[in-house]
Image (tube, rainbow, N blue to C red; front, side, top):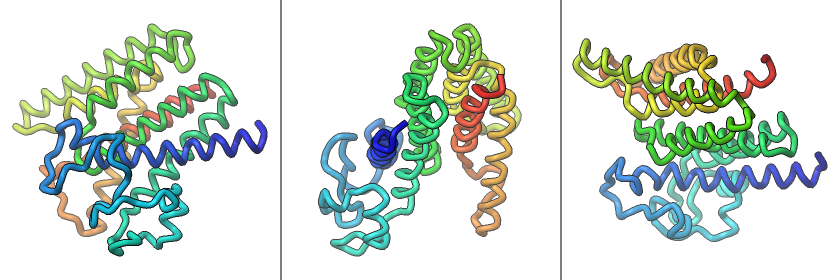
Length: 260
């Protein structure tokens, strides 16, 4: 691909990463997952981006992905309130998802599907990390898009994808029910089951054991990190499983294309 095409891909990834920040910040409230004491955050499309501290709208030239954060030293230009590091991280992740998709699959419809997979995973990771929810508004469309992509076998055969979706959901719901019966409180939410179903719909049932194992290891590393940071963590502390699951699923789906 030419330099111009790569610039378009990178810029597109940055812009979509910026929109994903809006989804992560406003989506949980829009979808009724959380209630905040602050004034309403707005919809996914309105109002224009604003500082969450002083709620003043941000000038267009201060919305340049990544660069604006660096130029403003991570502070609001109006109130000097701290801007979360999440914003440039998500924007960079949006660029990465676009670059890795088109780098692996070239300028193709498969690459576009792979980029969409990455962007959905980024939104799910951000929302689950901040709220411990994996919303149906993202997991179910992700599942449907995966099955659509695999009608022509882009990432897995359609039968394998359908079995993967069913098995991913059923296995996690069984584990969740068993955990609730034994421990008396919820250990895995329905969002985790739907996310694993979506991963199965993209990569087929064959990748599910590796995804669950890798996701569990990643989540354990998160727990260890929190303990090293002296955060209070015990047996009942809510630990989001979604980030580890999404990272493992995304990696497994892409890696599978080059080892089978």
